[in-house]
Image 1 (cartoon, helix red, strand yellow):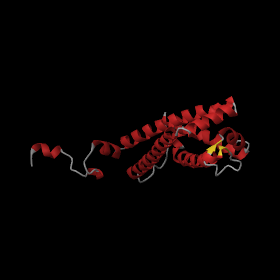
Image 2 (cartoon, helix red, strand yellow; image 1 turned 90 degrees about the vertical axis):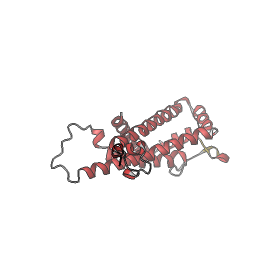
Image 3 (cartoon, rainbow, N blue to C red; image 1 turned 180 degrees about the vertical axis):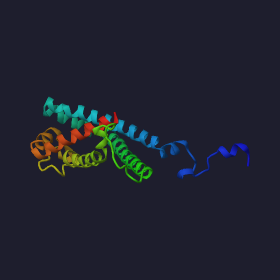
Image 4 (tube, rainbow, N blue to C red; image 1 turned 30 degrees about the horizontal axis):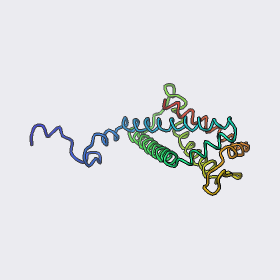
Length: 197
């Protein structure tokens, strides 16, 4: 065996068939946090874009519905953005769950006394705000994208299944329970984003 061969990592270390640096980096807590940061940034960008689009509701039904129609008439943009967002959400969740497991495995016995002084409220609520936001995302899609959770869902072009966003938002938020759920979810989203910032 040569002197330099001792420093070479064996193939298959930590499950990496080729010993790639990227795979090995992801196996570390820092790598998983990097994935969470990048995917969180993608999610944040989507939230800002989605908010700017939805603010057009204050310009009236013609503008809002025209915006919705334009999105549906450019499928590469619409479905491309959805695919990137879906991938980012899945990777964000996987990295978060793996980090939780790594932390748990590193400290199998809990501290006798925990002091949350150094941790922000947002960081202390990550473990339950994340799953609630996941549930909200599914509900939001069923409510305003697919209409399955919206009793008065209408289409501006039923033949092409293009929703009428203005009418659906107005009718959807006429339900106080749905409105309160959206407000609570937006507060949780703010805390979640604040923790990642």
